[in-house]
Length: 93
Image (cartoon, rainbow, N blue to C red; front, side):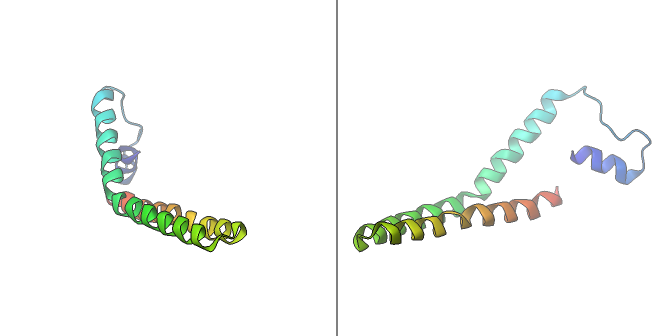
């Protein structure tokens, strides 16, 4: 995808890349995926901490409806933060 964007930006007539170095492209994608996973480790740790705190607070309160509401409210925000952070960082490659 990035190579296509580079070729379109340079004004090449046929912007689609050749399939001659599939192994190299695959390894580049693997390294980028590993980078994204490493980049998201702090958010994963924060999510686990919030989930543990929510489980403890829900267990102490004893009310099933309150703990269900708190856990569902806390469960979605890390995904939204992670998606917005990876979307903005993917354009600098």
